[in-house]
Amino acid sequence: QSVTGLVAAGIEHLSGVKVPQGVVLQFVSTTLQLESRNRAMNEYLKTLITKLRKAEVYALLLKGQGIASCYEKPLWRTCGDIDLFLSDDNYNKAKQLLAPLATSIEPEEVYKKHLGLVIDDWLVELHGNLYSSLSQRVERVLDSIYQDTFYKGEVRSWDNGGTQVFMMSKENDVLYEFTHILQHYFHGGIGLRQICDWCRLLWTFRDTLNYGMLESRIRKMGLMTEWKAFAYFAVKELGMSEETM
Image (cartoon, rainbow, N blue to C red; front, side, top):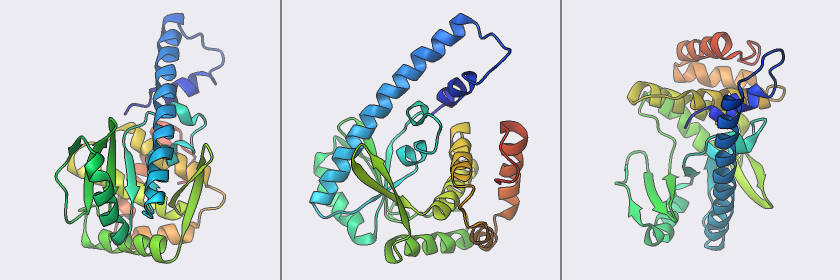
């Protein structure tokens, strides 16, 4: 899950610097592979969402291809697995529908309501909540995001080749992405791509985000220090706009 595609997109904007031909060819080869993989995933996502809806199972897309749409070149973002966010009922129905189609199934994390299934060579992860194992303060706000999404209808959508794919509202997506970064940071390891995803969300919706709500929920989570630390890194090391953070 590298940022090769993002670097390749940046190279296109270089001026006054001649990139060695060998390096250019390496990036061309890699980006062609990324495009092929992303197109295949988008097609499979259409098939999966359609299959679920026909069975009256309704899911939202987390991370992944939805965030890719926030990039200058969506097909150049390295894709991983397909993460679906579901209400309690839909989580159980999705398990029953998809488990028989899987070639392998990971052990279910009951507390997090998380189940990974390999279907048609794609890893599909079902999420019945957004819990992070960071703190109870964080989990309470993530519960609020669950309520916003499934009981208040606070969602946005992405047109995936004619198939409407729903995602969380932009503010809730930003908050979830940040807690997901911290979950990886404290419990395993983190890659630059995850930070770039968070930055791309903030940048894409910079003119319409409810910053007051974001700040209020970050403080309720007790994560303002962590937010400032990652914001400093994004601004000083990655060139992110300070105002956007």
